[in-house]
Length: 590
Image (tube, rainbow, N blue to C red; front, top):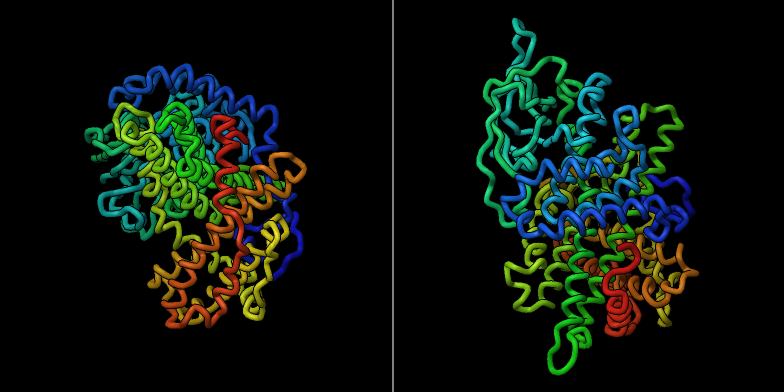
């Protein structure tokens, strides 16, 4: 494998080569402006959301939506990343991600904000012409206009291009007539415009339209009765002979399907940031309760079983942060490169994210599943109190489940991540074949039995990369023309990629902050725990792949690449737990 240090990172290249820790960005590097922005969100939540928490977690929340959205807009939370000429505030992608992490902590209302700032604004920001941007963006960032994203239909979920909603051109009136149905549309209850994906007449691919409610012909179903996120608006949307002016076609005809996928790339990494923020709130609830609750004469946080949970949650949050901000920084660097090459700004925005679509999918899956684990463990710390509908952790538990479903199910994102790697290889963007050939000849690194510090941790990552490439090569050879039918194998490969990216990101962060005292007491122990988790999960995935290939795992020396020295895992988790208990929560970036 190529271990040359890179200054300009390519999307998906982490499986082929090692990257310098200098290329990553970590929350410890937040600027003063970013810290102030995040604090302003915290202040808003404490003032506007926490006192009204119960009502905002119910259908009553809808009556507050307009007023709260206006306050959010006045604070500038809707304008980040939108050009100043449209009423926005220029900010890099990392700043947008940092803000998303914080606004998500507003319970159900965080989703209302997130839809507006992500899939509500992005289609017009990325693909709108000048007239469309001038007409809609100022209102979207001021909350005078609220938007929703209409893609899913009763018959088309993951297979978005199977949508039946149709637009027919009326030559006499010089307009389209739209008919069809969308479902599970967030923010639809108070949306003024609908970003609608539909096929024009007999087209094979979707097109996109900006549809104003004022056009008429739009009716809404009742609010869905949901398991969680009860304070958000989710309805079906029916289009009955809705007249759409020609100028409201968004982007090019039949490019809607590709646009939808590109917008979802942004949504996926921002979802990763969202659940990361909520996970910190879940950990805080658990730690606070463990400090207050006493059993057998001592606080719950003094028991090893509770410290095990807190320590493991801390390691996962550390990984979530490390990979999310690593990717956001890579996207920013790619954007700067595209702008320097003379690309138009809107196009550079979505192409820079698209280059890291693999990482966006992996982050979406890893973070949502880590969040599920964290909120479940935090509820378990609460015991019976956590099962009460009056507890906030119960709300977070219910809210967490949907994250593994929307923005592409986690199964779809797993398969997409592998498919995109092979597509990049076929396009010549990644030299996967050479990397596989080199990997087939490599032997496992010996891992020192001494304390597992940064150089040895990198060897663990290198071993996992080589093993994954060896198996990927064998899979590609056996299923060259039928890989799309081998979903179990592609998901197993994705699991390996995900663990590699998470662990490597965590180590890079520790190395970049090696002179900070918390590296010894928190970062390196977190990396050691994550190394154990990565090896264990990669072992399961590798065995699954080998058995599918009808070969014994030792055929590829699988277990040689999965060796770890013995180290005190229990003590490491307790060490992290003590740090978090003393700080009353996760402390690197609250």
